[in-house]
Structure formats: C-alpha cells, structure tokens
Length: 282
Ligand code: HH2
Image (cartoon, rainbow, N blue to C red; front, side):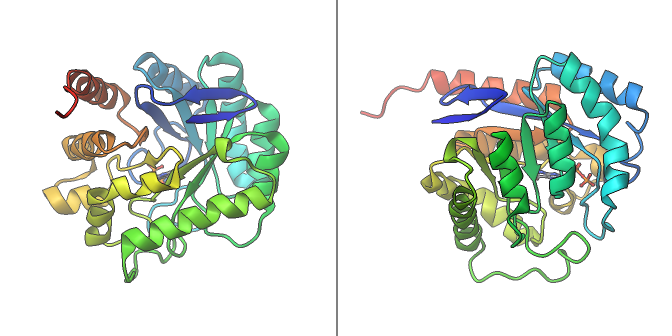
C-alpha cells in the first residue's frame, strides 16, 4: 500500500509514521499560545523533526470541544508566516490541519503536501476538489457534529460500525471529486463527538478499519479521554497516549499524530523491534 501525493510518498509496510503537532493558535487545549510567534514556531518544528517526526502538522484553529470557529482571514494570518518558512526549510512534508478549502488552497500553493481535514463530515465537496486539483495527501477524519457542540451527548448505535461506514463513504465521495485512494489516509477522530466509551471501543476495535484498505491515522495525544481514564491533567497523559499508540500500532495503525514526538517514536520503535522477532505461527 502507498500513501502519496505530488510532494511526498510513503510505501507500507514501513515503520509507523509520526506527525508532530504544531498549533499556532492562542487557545489549543494543550499547547495554545506556546507557538504564536512564527520564529518560535519554526524553531519548534525543527526540534520535532530532529526528534524523529516524519511530517509536521500545522494548525491555526483550535477544534477542542466548545471551540468557536475562526474566520478564514484570521486562520490564514496565523498559519501563513509559519507554513511559508517550514515549506522552505524542512526536509519532511508539511501538513495543514484545516477545515477550510481557502486555507488549504493557499497553503498548498506555498508547498504544503497534505491536507488534514477534521471536517470531512461536510456535505460541500469544495475541499475535495482543492485536494484533487493539487494532488496533495488528504486525511479524512470522522467527527460527529461540530467542535462547538460535539461533546453534548454524542450517540451511536454501534460506534465502530458507524465510523468505519463513514470513512468508507468518504473514500468513495473524494474519488467522485477526482482524489485517488493513494492520496487518502483515514482517521476515526478520537475525541471528536465521542464519549469515553465510544473512544475506548474505537481503540479496542481499531483493527476493523483495516478492511478499508487505506492507512489509518490515530490522534490520542493529551486528549481528555485519557484524563478520564487516568484522572490526570494534560501534562500527565503521555503514558496513556503511548499505551494507546502501541496498542493501535500492534493492530495495524500506521500514523500517529502527537505533541510528544520523541517518546512516541521511541515507543513505536521498541514495538517494531519486538514485532520483528515474532516467529510465524506454526
Ligand atoms: N486532533 C486534534 C486536531 N487535529 N487531526 C486529526 N487528523 N486527528 C486528530 O485526532 C486531531 C486532529 C486535536 O488536538 P490539538 O490540535 O492538540 O488541539 P486543538 O484542536 O485544541 O488545537
């Protein structure tokens, strides 16, 4: 299996890929305000790459539960100075975490390789046309509702079935707009319109997404469901995130979005060393 676009290409099986998170927002739930100065943001991205990040995922709008939407112009003003420099300076692909076709398009013009679309639940195909036109990578993430209200009593008949069905449907819809399957990665959207039980069920049965025959991306880093499991604040959630990532990697998940690149890379490399010593079942 391949995941590729005009500016990047990865072939699987291969060691798991790690996306380093770079939020240039004032209000992201765990790193809001830390990277608002473009110079510091770029420095941070270089550090994440040195720690082993395979891609850098830049976000200019917080999508934490209860977040208010940000205007296009404001989001562009936040991300463009950083994206411009990262596309020139980094040796790894840059991805843009946005729901807005206008932001995606501008970033792709500057050299961004991947659109990470947490708003893949939309009905308007404008974003998919942008991705098709630029031949970029595309992450389609499941979200029930919108960040403003998504955590108000999320409901599913069968969360694993519904999320898998949604992602399969998006894979078809994007192709209708000219995006090829090779460009697409699928993400169950942990924490996006899901209760604690929904998140845990999705993780427990994450291997069911393999039937979609596309690489799967997981974002658990510092998320509140870990706080509920462990009873700890954001700064103390790394062991929980590593446990989930290793669990998922052992079940075939290939991409991990994280704020904590070095420990995530080390945990995944350890798992891969153990797996490489597995004897075939007799
Ligand atoms: N989670 C967040 C943002 N973008 N993208 C994908 N594909 N998958 C995720 O799970 C995901 C995502 C939320 O994390 P963060 O960026 O740290 O927070 P905020 O939305 O507050 O900026």
